[in-house]
Image (cartoon, rainbow, N blue to C red; front, side, top):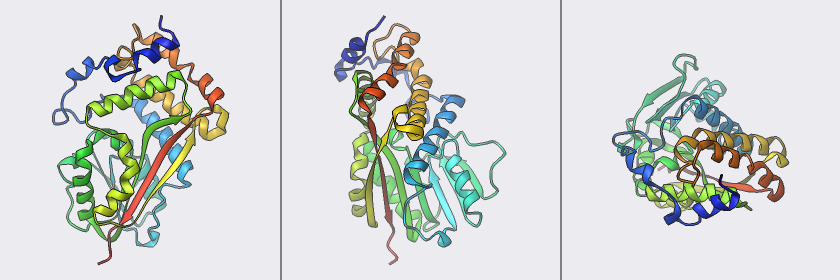
Length: 295
């Protein structure tokens, strides 16, 4: 049986983390994501995330676009499709297009003004120049290598109409203050992403990157979102969402975190709520947006 200190010590340095399991994961060209398809439980996680972010932003986006000009919208990495479907119902005169390399969208029941396709945006966005009024990305950073962001942003710039907007919503997986369990789990994930050339802290620079890529009116806003039942409804749903993620990924993480069995790991993460109640942590999330110049 592993103790709190065992979890902390096993993830205390990148050399102490067992990453051998990553060697058997196909490359991006062979498999959409290096994280396996997590099935219906991941859809539940996605839905809880969605309502967390909607509450955080007080809506489905914060870009100052003129809603009456919204005619064509693209979501990159739409996952469950919940954002697109809500937006399509709210803006029935706008056509919504979604592209995802590993989609989980509904097979049949969704608004008529939605179109979902499968595709890899790291190889280009398969739409003509100046097609969209708005391009939206959320929680895509963990699937895109750091050196591929600027080419992707250039592609977004290309498919946006003059005056169109792009918006990103991402997290750098930092929680403060953190207890031993949370620190160990987050260090494992951050180190694992770094091993794949995915730098989560890059989101802090997206306002600057958008400006350097030709966008104007670029903004980067930070939101500190509480986690844990101590923070009421928002903290509770954030805790449930994170707990679901830890459960659905447990099969391929528990050994790397030093546990002999999955059950030992799950028993440990059940103690997270005690840490939340004691420390009252917040997780940092960032929303960056920018506008393609009118001229």
